[in-house]
Length: 23
Image 1: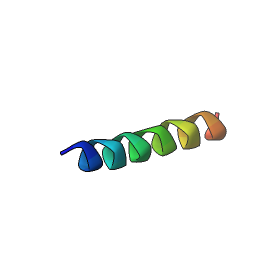
Image 2: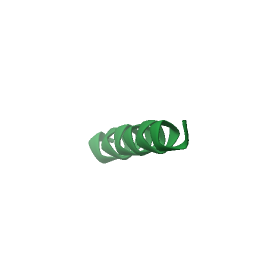
Image 3: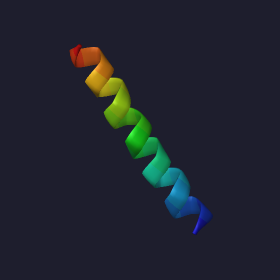
Image 4: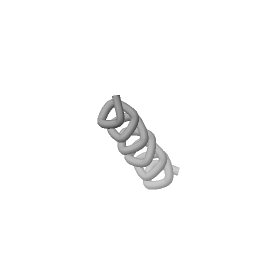
């Protein structure tokens, strides 16, 4: 569970960073 949560959080952070990068 913890590992999956970390992976999901990492993907979420990457998505947010890419969105900010586009702007």
